[in-house]
Length: 80
Image (cartoon, rainbow, N blue to C red):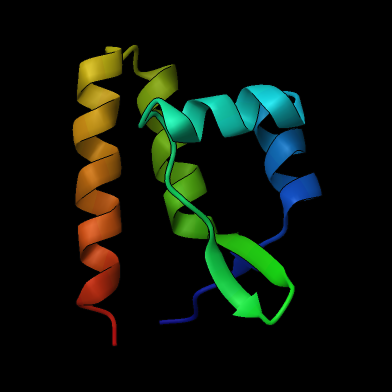
């Protein structure tokens, strides 16, 4: 399975959020933390972006989103 890493400008576009709002969501546990893709580069797995956007569209509560974020970040450990 091919996994695509998206950089911040694409994330902000897909989420329709500002940079500061995006990072506040991460701090609040409402979005996954970025992954390192280089010494000075970060990104987000595309499947996580799609999953979180779909959850928002489905009307999930913030608590449900936090649980989903925890699941997505835990699943990262199983990919290696």
